[in-house]
Length: 402
Ligand code: LMR
Image (cartoon, rainbow, N blue to C red; front, top):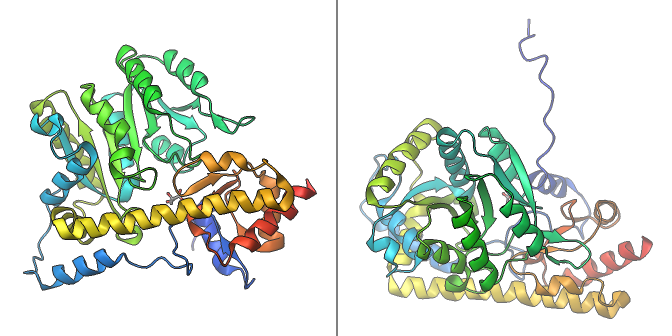
């Protein structure tokens, strides 16, 4: 008798990671995966960074400690995360009003924050940019939030709809939670500029909104310090907010799931109470985090020489992505599409919000074995000089058919 699970229906494949599975099953020798946000080098590989390899080696010769980490993670790592976010001499660090909890990638940082907010602010609604990362809505809905959106992308110009965003924020109920991408917006690659962030901060104060900053791409936009601009502005404004950090991309630690949730509170005492609450979320999910990725990040960020090597490798990834983006735009234009894809030149980070329609994305997959998200998002960091001509040619043929 096996009736217990008979009523269970199959869940749909994940809109991002599910595409990767289809790609792997495709027998086309020319196939290209532009779906998931994973950096690939010129050879189409995602190797360990050299500096990570070295750090791993050094850690192996350390005295091996086999016990559990504290619930909130490796203390040195949490301190390094705060320094990277706010800058080493930031006032918020001196005031000790920020607390950091090691998490299993950026995703669990979002989920810890979502669970904490939902439990303590059960009336609050959560707002995402339209569009946003495909996993944001399910994370916050699973935590019990009613999820709304605010305008972000303006399809006709391919730019940021800042006026629409401001007016949506102005009319949100006080105390709403607003998720913002601090740099390299996923999927559009469009970020507010400095003055616009200032305006947003004023609104957050006025409307008593809670900002939840998703910061998965520090160093992939303009630079490590530059990309932290918005986070630092929120801190300097004295606001209470949350930040989800990820080292998947900038340390290439994807499968080591290394992230952190940082919460900025009003003062040290308040921060300690917040920390004690979030520790209960960790304890009931995964008890305490795994050490490997955090130990690597802690070692690299705390060692002058390793840190400078890491910054060099990160800068090289950023430069290669920018080069691929520029080449893609240039080749599409030379192939006769004029300025039709010109808007992607101004986007930052590892993605391009190409403007390809779901039907065009489907044709790219079916006719060419080129995989992208149905929203038209393509991972520019997966392009290289060997697949670029093939991808360009396929986009040109597909775009001309419609
Ligand atoms: C992406 O957006 O492709 C990445 O953040 C990977 C993921 O987990 O979806």
